[in-house]
Length: 418
Ligand code: AMP
Ligand code: GLY
Image 1 (cartoon, rainbow, N blue to C red):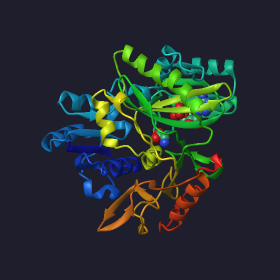
Image 2 (image 1 turned 90 degrees about the vertical axis):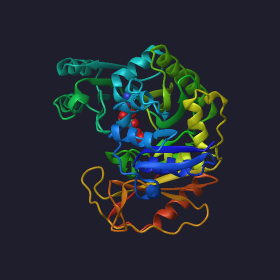
Image 3 (image 1 turned 90 degrees about the horizontal axis):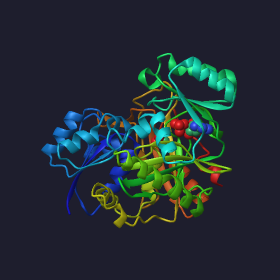
Image 4 (image 1 turned 120 degrees about the vertical axis):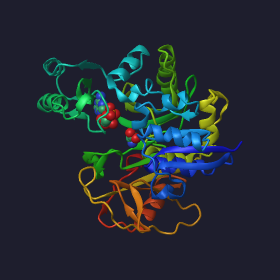
């Protein structure tokens, strides 16, 4: 088959997807909208939320398969719009995207499917939320219901922080996303991201990944979109995977189907491995960033065939093959990220020989023919090795060879797994 593919997005995740899809023997032509400097040769200048122009482009170029990276176009309904236009697209519908778009919706699905998760309650009135917090006490977790760019979750160690968090979320700063507030039991354990392919009926987990959400070494500093990943984390094992598949993944798909909103796309399960077993912290409805960078580095199967099979409801016929090597991705960010940071910094990347690694671009672009930074998370330096020590050594060796003034990165990606 010769397939024309359009990838929607512009981050490190999309560069990793493009890198993998470009290796497919099935590929005829690839486009990335709008992409970054790393995906330059495939880019078309259409924004991820410009659904009209994306549909028109896909029709004009006779795109056979569109793959959506970020949550924004998904929650805007890009999948519904494409399907209505008779275009094949990989991703969940707007209704199914509520698994990420509304934490109250996600929790309702978890309860229906009897899925292990933190005890919770949802409120529209700040006073009631505060009464509930006083009843359960601290520590607890206060969350905005809707999408809040990763800033809507406050893990409160004391009562005052929790009570203040309710005001902060509900005083309008988050708009509609803060109309409802969720209060959750505080859970303890190591976190693991499990991305799963899903075709509406069947789901198949990818390899497990551990992300590093805080900006600084030792899990200090502000929350970010993710400062680095590695796979697989040694806390994971086949018995945990079996429990997650049986008690979490399968029932989630079943309940979504029963509700009339089958889930097709990537179901990203944010897990916490507690003393009483794995529990769900959250669902995302898309590939993770920077989880995808290490997952793609380890995927040996043809990604394009897997995505195609999902859109045909034939995932059950696919066998995924993974490399036994460990992979590590270190994000290089502009100083100041996730708050204000400089853009337009000149970047110089080393020549990479053979299979020593890959530098995935995120916030990069070309200005007057020069490679410059254009975002907070700029590069996702990724490499691998036969064990974690070697994979970290190879990745950090590559980081050292990158010329990126006024940047920072974490030095401890993967060290939890050593
Ligand atoms: P979420 O976006 O819901 O995954 O929350 C973001 C981060 O907050 C998670 O990755 C956890 O580190 C933390 N978190 C969320 N919910 C809980 C919880 N119930 N107990 C402990 N930590 C949590
Ligand atoms: N790295 C976490 C996410 O993609 O949401």
